[in-house]
Image 1 (cartoon, rainbow, N blue to C red):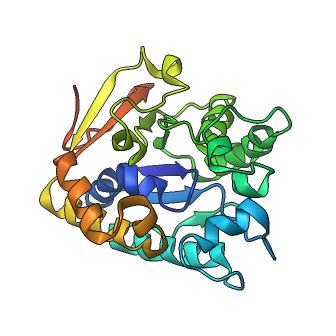
Image 2: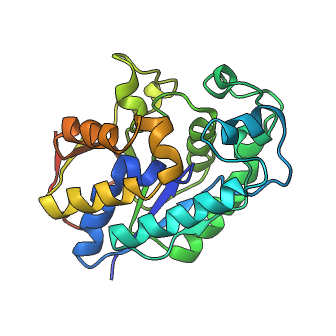
Length: 252
């Protein structure tokens, strides 16, 4: 049985950006694992970290990340994939990033998270021995996405990697920030055309992240509208060579 490993910075990124492909692979008999890097709960958050929770209507006493991990489990079920993995690293607001603009600026000089992530990713890749890895391109420039790319690229990875375009950052601006564009510009483009079942599974998985839908899309109707405008297409850049044929995935 072939194995796919999706490395998601946050608890929603993989489902939002490549959930249709994950569902399609599972439907083709692949063992699909969705692993999220930044999922650690932090007791008694303050400042900007607390504001990131309060602005989603969640009171301070709620364990925000525990709630989001539970959403991730529901999303994986909707996709028809294996139970998700949750790595114990802290999101950027808990690493001294103190405002929304800082989240989308260059990583802080004192933020050594990429070096911490790298051995954890190496261990997971060695344990899973995936035939395919999926990971973000860092479109939008969120510092956690950028650091995830840096960590993965620092490793000697033998499996092919499909680098997804980070949705919904891809559609928030006419020309989204792409601080790592030069790393991917020469890589071949891959286009995944989702069948109706994969589209439905992706939509259900995205909706499972209930705490994020209002913030990201303005509600379920906004989510549906954004997904409809994607027309059932997911886009990637490819490192390495795909040995296994994946129905619906083609160059272009």
